[in-house]
Image (cartoon, rainbow, N blue to C red; front, side, top):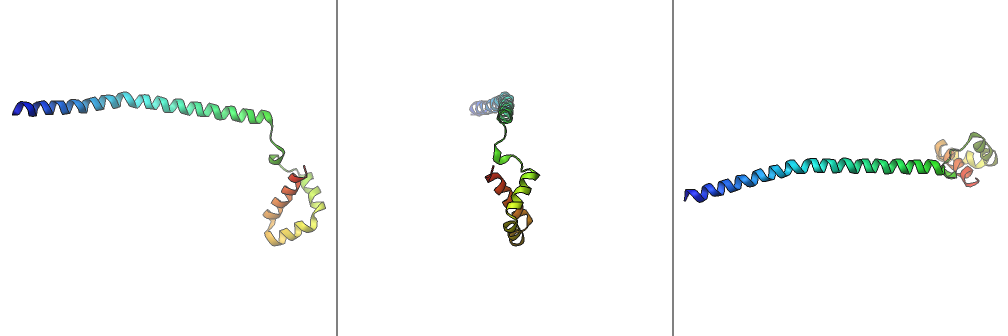
Length: 104
């Protein structure tokens, strides 16, 4: 009766060591895969950024120049002042910038 119990104990402990050994082997493999994925992602992002710089920015994302804003303000003084009183300066400026971008 003691021999099957001893055998079961040894078998159980060997499974525990097998799990530890597998984990010790698997952890570095997973770490290297994570680092490879991170490097690949960073390289793809850098490539996208370089392509976007090469193509240039679309007109709607270019900043509004002071001259463009002044010209739009001269044409839309009354509407700008109404929006300034009603919605505040930030909203009125945003509206004026949208007018400039629409006229580009």
